[in-house]
Amino acid sequence: MKKIKKYFSCLFSTVLLVLIWAEFASAGAIVVVVNKDNNISKLSKRSLERIYKGKRTKWQNGAPVKIIVPAPGSREMQALLSAIGVSSEDALAKLHLKLVYQQKLSGEPPKMSSEEAVQAVAKDKGAIAVVDSDKASGNVKVIEVEGLN
Figure 1 (cartoon, rainbow, N blue to C red):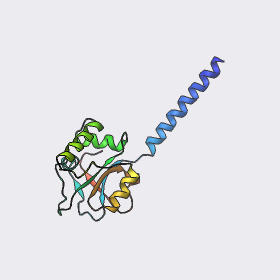
Figure 2: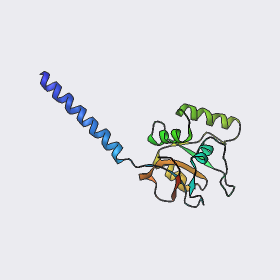
Figure 3: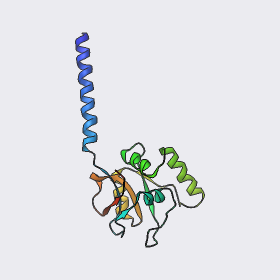
Figure 4: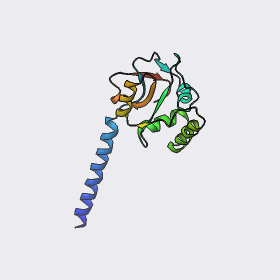
């Protein structure tokens, strides 16, 4: 009986590891997308930080920047936090609430999965999002951000 339990425990662990590996292996790189009509083609990491920290609120053409935040707990969220130097999701949420209170943001930025963010960016010329590269298609443009990955 102990051998059977040990066998199934080992089998379960192996299957779990394979599933976890498959999830990460199938995931693409993390990229930044804007609407295809946005004339920007690349950003510095500092510019991305300024956008997500509410210090840059307009594009070069004067249109408002509309940030979309990755879904909580996602790889995209972790990449964004690392890129902009924010310690946690809570710290980013508090920063955004402070910016809303100071009227530097019109409202708390929406939190979306990569799929949802790509759809939203495709519909909004001022939107920017951090997404999985496998989801970045349609009416969005992947822009280069120095040091994101």
